[in-house]
Image (cartoon, rainbow, N blue to C red; front, side, top):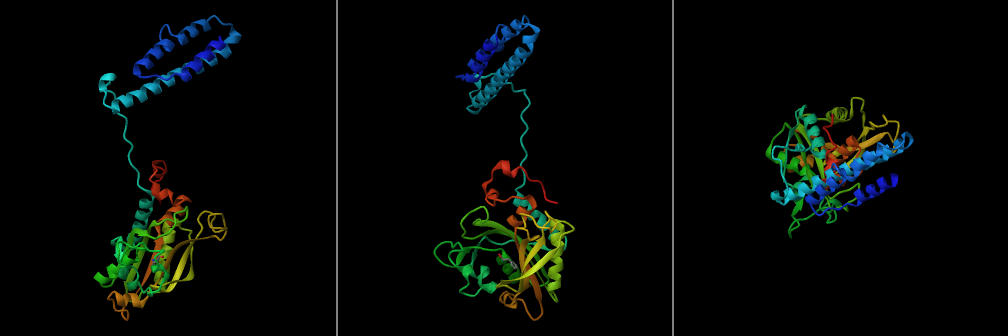
Length: 344
Ligand code: PHE
């Protein structure tokens, strides 16, 4: 009897139907009143109590396999028939409840960007946007990049059309230039957007990514204001216990310039693989707006001063969600995208 069960199980596994009708025939042959499996259950009643244990398990396995296979084949074939709207070939029950649609989810980059906007919005930073296709002046010249600065190099910047003057912005600082050109201080803006750099794509670099940059210009704005603003952001984004440290750096458009690190929220500063055992994670560049930039944009640098900061949204998302491969953010694989809930 056990051999009979096994040979039936093989038959179930091997069964490939040509259509729905064959599936139904198969069901009757296996599970119908006079079907092979039904007959086995009758035979089972006559087996000895010892045999029953082993046989019972095998038979249950066989029955489950047959039921699952038949249901699965039916569902798939019905779907196919429905897709080709060959409604005549199946008895469609229009009163059956419809499957629930899955509601979409926000992209993790949008979630983090929205959170950044919300944190800065609470202290008066208003969102500002600008064009992705820019000119040299807004991306480099107005921001105090010397003519021979390597960032203008063909290797970094994507140029559009023939002229060297139409390009894809390499950072969102160009938005700040546009804001300064059209508004007088006090200015307090946060500028999110997509930026483009001619980089080979790998798990840690991409030719498209997102930034969010802040700009604050008023009378008597000092480096202390910058420090407190960023400390506030770090605590809101990474937790109340977060600390920041600033390392001297260089950007053409800020003086002095700094690179900002936040204490690693995974190891609490003790050192782990994510912070490369330093206890610190780099999160943004910042500095006091260079007077040359203010002057280029029509703001009186003897009266006003300001600070600017800029961060990569992917970088923050990576730290918040522990995603190590940047490319995942651009593949739009639903299995990846469905995992994210808003960051708090
Ligand atoms: N624009 C800089 C970059 O893309 C970041 C930055 C913004 C640095 C503002 C300082 C001040 O790297």
